[in-house]
Every structure is written in structure tokens, then in C-alpha cells.
Length: 199
Image: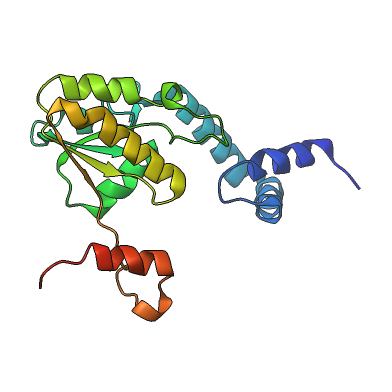
């Protein structure tokens, strides 16, 4: 038995990150089973997000239409000399949840990827160069993924900023908190050894 509307809902949900076909199917069935409390609320929230959520014109973080540039860019207590470069706006949320970083952010909106045909012009690299050229930035911290594409993006940015008089650093590599050596993969262990520090 096929229901076109239900199949469309399942397909739409399965395109979301982290939801495969089975998870999308379970979510869709839960929504249509109780449309008043669940489906109606989801529709309202999606419409509100579409109308009111934007990416900050300066850093790329999620913000409201009314707060653009965002509160992270306009907070006078943050350090203008330290700029953290991330791949996506969601990475800014993760770093803010972790705490400990009081500088500014810059989301690239992706990473260099020949497989996905993402080159330098598809990323917010020119905006990054413009921000650094402004003269306030002294250090650029690269908080990029540690896969091959993240490493290539980090190398490209380091080369791009080398002549601009800023220090380019990268997040430390190592073992996750509450984890043991026996559970780490070889690359993580190799990077942890390379990035060791004095006790």
C-alpha cells in the first residue's frame, strides 16, 4: 500500500543529516499519527525558522533577521584579535557550548572538496581575507575537521594568510576525554604523540 503524501514526507525527512530511510519513516509515522500536537507544531517551527533565521553577514553563524550581525560579532567583551575559522555555522554552536573561546568566528560554509566540486570560490575565503586585512586579527585558529579535505583546507588557508602577518594555529589533536589508548585509532595516536606537551 502506498500513500504519496506519506512517501513524500519520508523522502523529505530522509534527506536530513543523521536520518536514514528507517529513521525518517519512524519520524514520519509519529508525525502523522498525532498531527495536532506534533505535526502542527513542526510546521509552525519550520515556517518561523524559514522567515526569521539567517546566517550572520559577518561570521556566518545562525542569527535572527533582527540581529544581523549576530550577538557573537557585536559582543564588545569578545577578543577581536583572535578569529576561529570553522567549516559550518553548526560548528560555532558546538564551540560555544564547549566554552573557553572568547574570540570571533568565521564559517567557511564548507571545505575544499574535489569530489563535491567545492573549490576556493565556493567558500567564504575572500571574506576571511578581507577580515584579516582589516588589521585587528593577530591569530587565526583553524577548527576544521581532521580528514583529508579538512587538512587541504587548513593548508590552503595557512598559505593564503602566510604573508599577512597573522599567526595561524590549529586545534590540538589527541585522545578524546575519558578515553583510553586502547580505543584510539592509529592516526589519532600518531597525532596525539606529535602534539604531546609537558606535564
